[in-house]
Length: 314
Image (cartoon, rainbow, N blue to C red; front, side, top):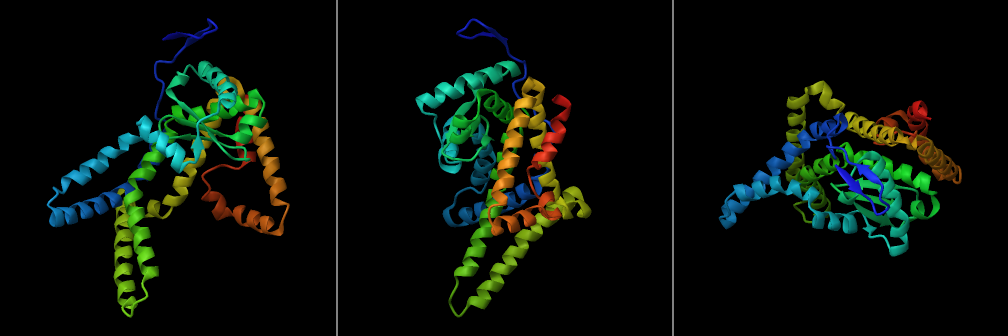
């Protein structure tokens, strides 16, 4: 497909604007135990509503399954961006800076940039987001302080999350695991709030329910992946997240933004190192964060690792 910009330049769009890479499939596969646990919770609630209100039990279940499509529903995405992610629409001067850079990045990638919505976060940190099906957000600091080349590299990285399917698969995993997590938190809150003489009995009942939910999730994971793999499931999920970041870096690098992306990563690494050296508490936090278990459970690779993977493109 060929599109004419206002400048008359031709932009060739790729036939497939999105794809699902191996990391997106990995995110979905590792979310199956949480999905099955949530499905059981939804069926339990549906059965209770059927018995109390006469509502057919299949209606809430079908509604919950179909609700995943809201990930790509623009009005729902607006609500997610505003109230969940804390983003806002760019002001006119911000749009005048952001939109031309975004058009340049998507033109190089052969992607229709109009498919996505640009957002800004009121933050003094250097960061950017790719969420749901169409959300691309940057912090006000990144928008105001980064030169256009570096800003383009950051946007190319976020575009890589979208075109690889990382953004929507991550949100779907979180969404379909929400009923199980919500019940778990509600039971914990109930146990903490009980102050009657029957507290021990309530604790026992809540404990049994928590064990039951945990057992369901554990059984689902053990059946799906085998018991040895179940034990390392959190580490596998984190590893998939790190791989998604590296793939998004590679997407930006393949478009020619490797040098500018490396500059941004080096800037963030230096800023983080300075912040950690400011206080003793920060030094202790750094030691804890740099421990082996913490690194294995991190969903983002460290900056030296990301720079190492970019070296072939520099």
